[in-house]
Length: 522
Ligand SMILES: [Zn+2]
Image (cartoon, rainbow, N blue to C red):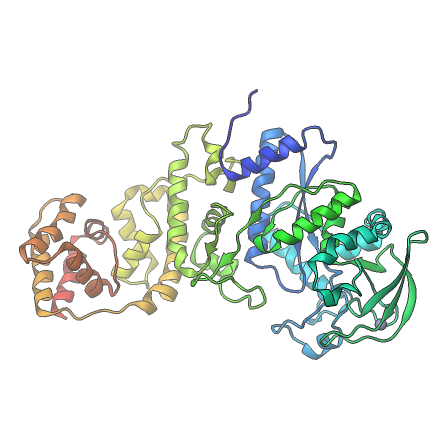
C-alpha cells in the first residue's frame, strides 16, 4: 500500500517519526510529556498531552506500530519558592530547598506535596480519558532506572561542564555541578555543593552550606552514592537522562524551552544516544496578548470552559497550528464552538482520503467516533436568540430553535446541552456588557418604518426579509451600515448582531415586530 500524503501537522510529525525510526527496535515507540508538580495541572498541560496524543494516533495510523506516552512528573525537583496560593505557608517555607517528594502535603491529604499533585494530575488526565503511563521521577531514581545514565554523566562530568558552563553567568560557574546530592542530615537538595567526584566508586563528596533566598543549610559533610535516589541531576541534564533511560522518541515543548532542549540534546548525544524528535509550540497568551503566567494560574480553566462550551470546541481550538501563538480568553468561545460545529457539519461530506486531515478526525479517535451533526444551528445563533428573548427559559429557546430548523430534533441532545452552555455564557459574558441606547427621533422613525415594512411583507424568504432594512435605509437617506448599528444598539444593546433576515426567521415575525415596537417607543 502506498501511504497517502496527509497534510495536517500531526501527520507531518508522524511522518518524520516514521522515517527516523523505520528500523528501530524500540517497541513501543515512546512519547514523553513532562509535568512540574509544584502546582496543579493547567490548560498548558492539557494542550501538550492532547497534541502529543494526536501525533501518536497519526503515527499508529500510518505505521500500525504500538506507541506509549509517558507522563513524567519531576517530583524530585526541589521547592524554590512557596507558591502564594498554597495553605501552610510557614511549613512550606521551612521545607524550601527539599525535593517535592519529601515535603509534607500542605493539604494534609497525601504522604507528600508531590504525591498530592501527582494524584491531581492523574485524576485530571483520567477525567479526559487520555491514554498514558504515569512515571514519578522519585520512583524512577529510587528504583535505579537512571543508574546507568548517572554513571555515564559522572564519567563525563567535565564534558558536561563544557556544554553547560558557557551558558551561565560567570559568578555561578565555579560551584556548578550537574549533580545535586540530597543532604543526608537535613534532606535539602538546593543547599548542597559537590566537592569531589569518584567515578570508580560512583560517589560524590558534598557539603551542605549553600544558602540562597530562604533556603537554609545545615553544614553537614558527606560522601554519597549517585545511585538509587540519593542524588538528582539538574533539570537540563535530568531531561537528557530521561530520554536516555527510556529511549524517548518524541517530545514536544513550549517555545520558552528551545534553548534547554538544545542543551539536553547535546548531553544525550554525549551520553551516546539521539535526542527525541519534537516540535516547539507557541505559548498561550491572554486577551491583551501577554504571556499567561503559570504562577498566577487564574482565569480560564478547562472545567470552566466546559460550563460555557463543549470540551471538543476547546480541543478544536488547541488543534489549530500549534506554532502560532493563541490568545486564550472568554471572547474566543463563540467562534471556537462555531468552527467546531462547522467542522462536524462538513465532516461526512469529505472524501474518505481527506478525512484524516480534518481536525474532527483527530478529535474523535481517528474518525471512529465522529458524532452526527447536520444542522445550521450554532452557538452564535443560540446566543442571538437568547439576546432577543431572554435567558430564563430553556424550553422556550428550544421551541424557537425547533421552529427555525425542524431537523434539530435529530440532534436535540447535543443542542440542549449547547443551549444550557450558551445560557451560562450569555449570563456571564454578554449580558454584563449590554448597553441599550435610546434612539434619536430620526432613528425612531426609521425603526418604526422598518417595523411597518416588515408587517406588510407577506413572504417567508430570509433573503427578502434581509433586504427590507436596506430599502428602509435608502428611503431614509441613511447608510445601511449606520442603520444596522442603530438597530443592534437599540434592540440588542450591542454593536453587532445577527443578520436581520436570520433574526426574524429565528424569533418569528410577531416577536420581531413587538421587539421593534418596544425599540421605537423607548
Ligand atoms: Zn543539610
